[in-house]
Length: 431
Image (cartoon, rainbow, N blue to C red):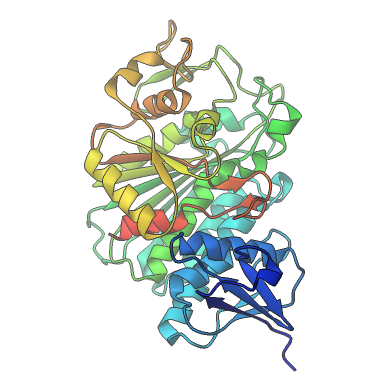
């Protein structure tokens, strides 16, 4: 006997019994979402799913007309919570290919959300590298198209990845970099169409620039960039990606110990750039620099990096939007169009040449934060990364993923990892 709770859509108003302009009405074993065609349908469905999630229902099945793939996806996003996922039957009124697309998308995005939600003890830097490689390996049909390696601990120094090594040396679990090559062309000399670089700080105490408890308690999520990019690449592959893509995940724990890096230290990077540490809580950009340097060894056509990089981005847009910073207007437009296509929110923050002048140091080429007053934190963080990009004015997008984690549940999202940005990034690299 089925215990499915049925959910359908209607463009008719609910009976006044359920309240004025009610979004939901109910009968035994059935709910109707009453849509207002003059408002965004995606967010209405996602909001309704959040309300139903709070009712401890058995498995939900979608039925009836008006459900398209986007609205089914919106419902799945809203229904998810960190304890039980999203127990949903997408229904029978869709083609097999559409069902497969939704099912695989759900599996990948829930991997991202669940990985972000893991406690820091359950996810070391090397664990994150391996889990990400395994995710992608599981969706690659021809294993000859995939190769990867994980560089960790003292081996980082052999490759001159000093940023990851220095940030990670305060922990007994060493820093690590995943280098993954997906090449479906079969040509070992094929162009690398995209290099993807993700921040994977599996826990961020702030180091000696120690965070307060309230700010530190959610820092298991500071690897959201790495998880989001791994998910985006996996999703693109299952959708038939024909391009060669390289993925670099820059992973470390930023902890306090006698071995931890300190304020006043100077890091000398493989490309010769020196960086003074003025704040050990600005560690994400230090590890990302290694990934950007490594990525450009193969002269990729375009570069995308993604990181939960700054509190300044969250102050600017909250946790509803992800941010993009770039000097390349055409590339920025592709990102904006891709976000809109996938019903994800993206906002462009300013990044111009003058921001490169706002991270000066008396003791190194650059400082890891601006020493000036009132400087734009997200923009100057991008300026630091730009020091490690050969042509920062073109073919480079930096995403500050303000919207990848939800501190507390709201009307659209459960608390925890959101997977927000996976579809947009997949759309960009597949375009």
